[in-house]
Length: 282
Image 1 (cartoon, rainbow, N blue to C red):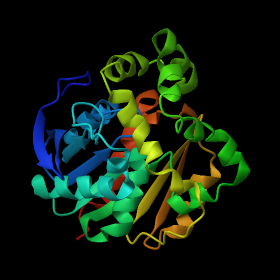
Image 2 (image 1 turned 60 degrees about the horizontal axis):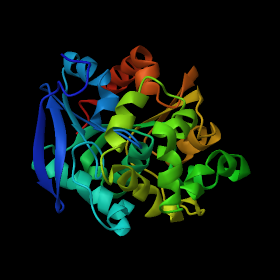
Image 3 (image 1 turned 45 degrees about the vertical axis):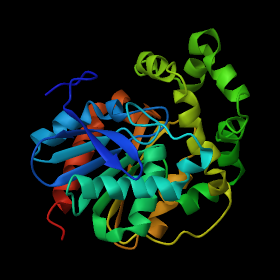
Image 4 (image 1 turned 90 degrees about the vertical axis):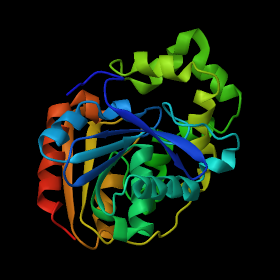
């Protein structure tokens, strides 16, 4: 099983008005993996083999605007309502009735909304880095300060120029993840791709406003890494208050935001263990 880029079996599916590029590997209970910004399915390259070896069918899409999935032209096309439709459309296309799900970064945000709006499609959920949307929005001034970049990303054109100058030098400094930077630089250098990723922020800025989004109805495990550059721990640790069917919290000491590639063995163990506990859920 490969752990390098572009070696997984990739398929195309027409979903919600776009063509999605999707990795599907293995056989068994379905596991859906949702990546964040500025990633693609490749952020899961260390998790896919471990999950397949544990007896799961892994579904890892390039989400709207990322990887080799189509870009939309309008900012509004990236609103969370549309992104949720992408996910449900994909599950229908691959005949996945009910999945075990994990999401990281924006994929975690999307996963929370899929779980909230379509509880009949999710057996259990692993939220990585980003907590329940109510907890993120009520994270207080400390979270607002850490999330300063979400405001900067609203500056259309200027944000793109700053992030790409000097061969993405500032982007590299901001993200602090050298293991992923070569792939990000290559991917985001393609015309329109950086703007497509930033449009996730531009279409969903209202998420920073406090609002009670309600509780999820399936078991949830939250994973937070103490070296996260963008998120405070409380927005994840408080998420259990909105998980009525069970909550488990895991803290990864000394690991940065991109935990899937910075601490793959730990992440793999936690994912397999948690999914094994819940794979038989109807």
